Image (cartoon, rainbow, N blue to C red; front, side):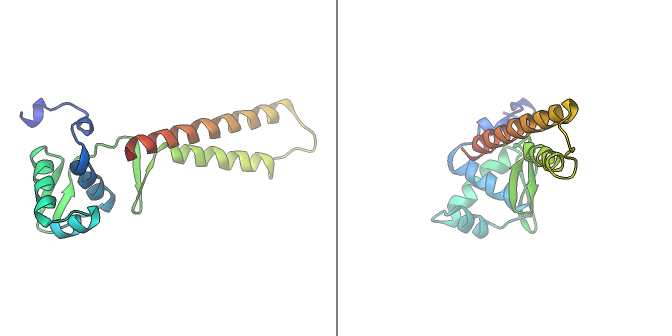
Length: 144
């Protein structure tokens, strides 16, 4: 099967150790050698790491550079890398609305309750809960 015949979402094709190797490379964010993959994923032999890296190369998901193997195509849509962590993009929205909620409750708190302020408070609470729930669900889907 050529790369043009492949389905859009190849994460479904990845499973087991090959998926773990792909995630490890994705989290590193830089080219990684075979032995580093072996240690990072907890494989018994370098040949096992090499086998899974070859599968990823053949599928077009990673490239081989002089410095090692690196992710060529990102499959985890909706995820952003923050340092060495991979978090759902919904996390940024949850943090944004949590900040708004904080300011509504502290800095922007009126001396008496106004309907507009109460509505803004409710909307911020709903947004924080909704985006936090979506972030947790996205993270649990990507971790499985």
